[in-house]
Length: 336
Image (cartoon, rainbow, N blue to C red; front, side, top):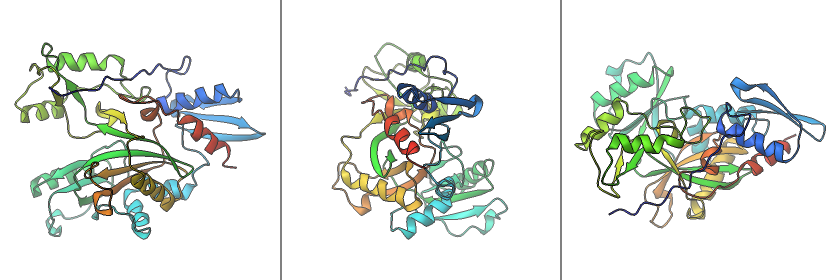
């Protein structure tokens, strides 16, 4: 039987601000604790202004502010541009090809499988396809990616676990492992019932740190591969994964691993943030084997994210609340 740690998830929406994204709620609460005057400019866009030492600071979605320059934000927002800055700073990353929407797929160069396909400028894992093994899968993945962006990237597939490093003022303040949507059996309930139980304290959107698991075609296909259905009853302690991608937007779990993460990879995350000049950033790193001796061959940096989701670090499914909002607000208020 698999030993499964008990969830520590305990998010409660901020009273009066429940309609804001969770990351913005966390920042507003910190502003209130400091008794700083603030204004809600546009609630639908999570746009606020805070006053500090006779200066005004505009904050969008909790972390987008003057703390990061426009050029740093632009670099991180374009996955291909990110690769150029990682390359020029000798930081390991997945090599790939940039394709435009009008590409004749019959003229594609010979591809060494497996690969990953992703739109050049989307976030939250939208239209990202991993571990593609055949040309047929590749063409389908490209078609999907081009629905969301005029450019798509084909890059080498690097096996391992993906971790999110939160870098603030060039220090790592939190690290989270995002695990794909899953349920753990109790020997009594069906997978559908276990999903319903796990969804009780989750949200339908980013007003909550963790989102509900939705039983869609991808979940059904993933279960079918395991010779399961939503009516199957897993054994007690058996963990059943419901999809491949680990995005929180599709019901994934955030697990805090800040204390366990070797300093070697924390330094890589800081170096990656500095490569683009990001003072506040979520750095995604895939580590092949976390138990192995840290080395240059054991990781790649995947993405730099200027909009850094804070709620996964304060309210992980399993682990400590890292109270990262204190460091973020300090960084923003010292940016002028």
